Length: 164
Image (cartoon, rainbow, N blue to C red):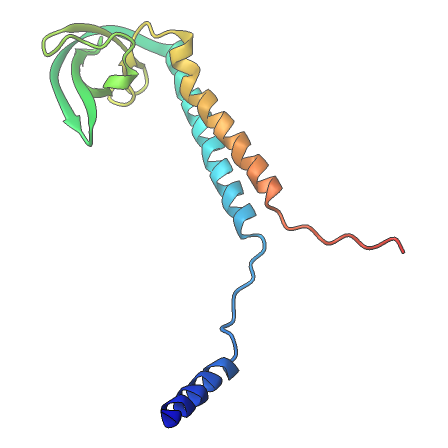
């Protein structure tokens, strides 16, 4: 039994003499990550606010018909067909949580609005309230501020010099 114990002692002694693996020291990592996420949410807030402002100022309101309802990745969508004043027909998908009053089903008549410059782009329900319009930009702005505070709180600081 002593021979076995000697072998174990030698093996564990050799393992403990090996140097510890080197680690990478990147003190600004969490700060940079939080700042990038804050910038992402700030950009998202600006984009959604600009889209909503464009729809509120220059959106064209028209009638449409729901032609299809479907679910994708547990999210329900409604396809709405509408015709622009110049006679072009478009079909747009609108998520069910973007409706203030969700349609009853296929064949329902709905009021929608779209930007005059891009009828095939962003289409939303007409007559949405101000709260519906500002919800996403405000939430994204709050998330941006939270991540900015996180970035400020995780920055590396220099140790203070003693006064003695």
